[in-house]
Length: 302
Image: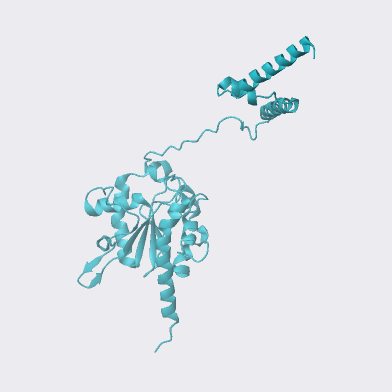
């Protein structure tokens, strides 16, 4: 072996030892060189292709939204603004003096339940049928709660005593657009008239259709406003019976009181399912009493 060949071999051995020592070094550089590899062309191409696809889809989506035409004059790409309802203020009776109120009470003696509303709306007054506005939930809640075995129409209001032993009346008779146009004074004045109706017809129970009606009754009977911790939906204490008769020739304990939610479509304080839960408690009792009366009427005479 010649001298240059020996030198080359020695150089190779020395270089191999240096590489081995460096690759086995615990330093970061040694570990990095040991495991580092260049990305393959396929990996690089896939990354660029994916980013380009996402970018193209976003641009296409943006282009479609910008070209979309408004529907019924409303631009769907713009944020939706909520319509804020404004409550009505007091309206003097002269405002609706031109209206003829065709609504009458649906009453009969010894009803299972008498429903007390606030006052007739414009549509109710002109048509002469209770809770006749399409947005009013009264007839739907009446059925869903089992107060009636089927969904009744507003035009059947006069037949409710005969059909299901249910009655209808209001605490104020004059029509308005909504309850906000009534004064507390005229609501309070209607309490005495309501008490007289109940004492005369003697229903088993009275359903107050709305918190404000019960607040008015409470204010007149107790001489003060009802406190927050005193108010509750559902059956009231037995001491709150309405229409009590204490004459010497006649004694009657009065009708039980159930405070239900308002059914007006203008009232947004409660969701429909929350109203249904409250009405369901009344409906269970009404359905049971109707079944008991029917069973008693069909029982053979001894």
